[in-house]
Length: 113
Length: 113
Image: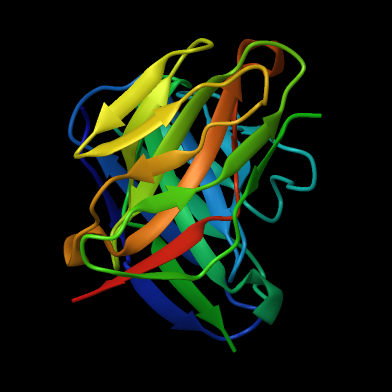
């Protein structure tokens, strides 16, 4: 299994600003993903973080709004850019050796005012 | 497309009661099915999984059987404890869609002493 930590655990931000969320895995993993969990809703995949190359985004999510980095096999960042109240959500990082086995971080609770 | 439909909550049970959380799915091929649990303030943890029809996943007294004929993967536990209070997510992953995860909306369970 893998243990995943995220920073920050929560934040309150002003609209128009950006927040970068960090995800650290305690072991090398093949795949890392970023999800959004909006209030009262399920998890939605934002993108797959690819090591050393551009992330693969799902429909409805774009790089300009959610730039992602993955410089190595254990670390990734997600930036939520030019935030609006609609971006208030829980952002979760997950990782694993394949899509069928994913381990999740504790999430970052973001509130945009 | 692929999707997961989960019993809506919240569910409140007394300790030692029997638990069932319904989950049905729609998939084009032969998905793997999962139950994840999210305890308060924590990330999602894999509770159990089943990768083919008639498989039964089990863990911590929880069970779910992959029923292809009814496209279901209902979660059951014979005697719940207060420590089982959490949000439970049903999910599927299918190779036809690149093993992307599809999550249900989650069911909140509260067990009272």
